[in-house]
Image (tube, rainbow, N blue to C red):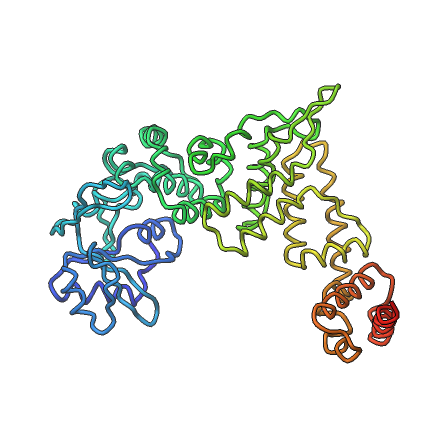
Length: 446
């Protein structure tokens, strides 16, 4: 028995049916129901024209896509996109139909969709309409284009990445003819807006089969991330590594938690290695300062994908620091906490774990060392050892009272924090004020 359609969605179907129209849940929500998952979004397709949908659901209807026949019905439990059955015209921009024509046929509407597993409809009574074999493809875990894969993928080139994303998130295989079409038309991805590319890649890298897809389809992903291509097959010539640069990066990413910042950082962390590669007299490969070059490449990628500034800066900082040694002393932990904060310190540890797990098995003992670092981090945090201005026992107003002004206030606060982090003075208000007063007296006597 499939999970039930939520009452608020069923009510929309009922209202449309009682008004004499056909109405079905359609697309990803049906796929997820058949897989036993809880859908995140609900879409309805109907024979009702957009103006008829608007009239039926006043005042809760919003014309969010009238050109394509879509009305959003807003309920207290969630919003549902209700779209009229349609046929799509030609796609001259490889993304959007130039024209849509409404139709009375559900099968025609389903025929324009991307993959068979997304081309099923579910009525109010729980009956499935499946003219293209979606249920069978779900059973055998296959992604297959509806109809001619060349037509489907050239109509909307984003479907190329959507196919890879679904394969990664559902752990499905890609049908042979669909796979051939993916590779034939991969260069059309250059026409797709980077924001949409980013959305698909962000979902792909979190999928349970992300590593398999990124390794098998590096040539396709490389159209939108050309920086990865020099890393594919690049032998590291180093005893620490048993994989080429790209496979190491992908395996490291897959070994990490499904935190998008961590996964992006690991996917990009070694892209600078081919540029930094040198070989010594013994034939051993080295990658001196590759973290800096990888950061430069990561920043270019994140900017091109229109990532928000916070995500971009965090990913790039972690890429730069991924290979920096951690001094396993409380002072060393405080130093790094000051630079990163707790959240990104823990992310850095996860990045180092993933990086190590993708190295030669002989070097996996580093995991225990990282456990010890994390335990020391926990001690520093548990004891509330000072590593930030927020924790410092003196504040800006205290320094103003001593006679500091303007930029000198911030400079002195940071200098005092340095003394505390380095263990040169306790984080005690009286001692810090004495130290600050002594410094201002020195300035006055110069």
